[in-house]
Image (cartoon, rainbow, N blue to C red):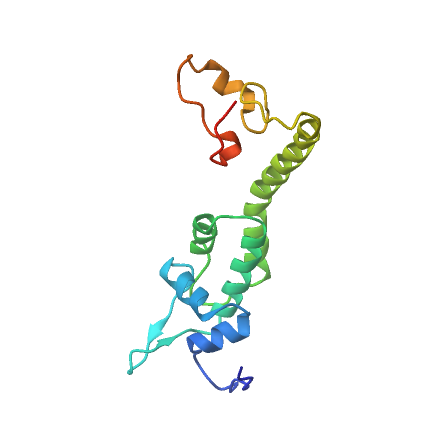
Length: 160
């Protein structure tokens, strides 16, 4: 792997520069661009060139992904940022305020799931009639007799 230093006078970055500097694969840079999360221009040789602010955007994307946020939500948040400059601390405060509620809800759901797991350890059957993990709020109990049973916990194993 090459560790060449970027010329500080360089006005744009290649896809390889972005990947190396941000710690993601080149394919990830292409994917983010295809999804509209970052933008590039093309030089005379039709090669992608990225402005330096894309490094901050990739960092924000990586942090948001670590919270479990879907790329569509990340894109919607990034679309609110100005494209003419690098996101700054105020932009980050704005983004983190937007994401806090969703992250709090995700944490609440994970804690509830964790707490429900304790009840399943003794049972082990993943009963389709009463399992709070496989059948929340007993929605399958309302199914009429003779309907096909779904698989246990999405494993493809027929229900009991």
